Amino acid sequence: MSTVKPGPRSGPAPSGTGLTAQEQAVADRFARLGAQFADRVAAVGANDWSGPTPCTEWDVRALVAHVVEMSEIHLNMVGLPVPSGPGVDVDPYKAFVRVRDQIEASLNDPEQARAEFDGRFGLRTFAEAIDSAVCTELVVHGWDLARATGQDERIDQVDIDKAWEALRMVGEEVVRSRMVSGPALESPPGADEQTKLLAYLGRRA
Image 1 (tube, rainbow, N blue to C red):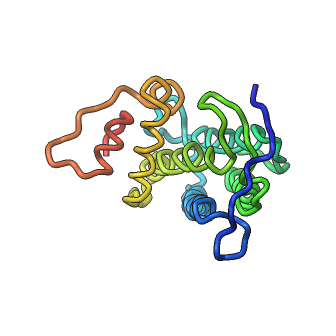
Image 2: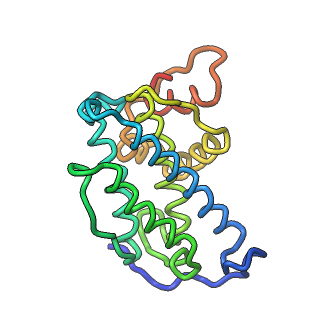
């Protein structure tokens, strides 16, 4: 059970938002990845929702449902509201956008961004958890969604680096049990960084 308490106060960023530079970077990164994932969901064809994905137990709709569920879980961890609206079974795009918008708003609120919970990896702030967990979900499952639906599969180098950082933090056991990863694959000789990351997660680029 997570224990929620007010997060620590720290100096405001020059922007005047009340966020530290690091918190602002998390908010900006989530906004960028959330917009990218939403665009990919919007581009899924009407006949593609039941198609297969690299996560072999999930079709496209189930993949999006997982991302929405993980977003809702992180809001619940610190007692933030989960906005009501259509589920993924009714409107996948609206289902994702409603939770994305709530997380984005909370990351831009210093008090909510710094709300703490005591979980599996110790005491963490909402912003820290979104940065390592939900942003990594958006990167990895964003690639899954793109691969499944024939969209642009490129992952920015900064997101590759941040994904590695998050994966090393949680450890091999969690990666295999919670990140929906198959056994690590061997990267081909001369593989680029995206291919190496995906191979570690059991995916062929």
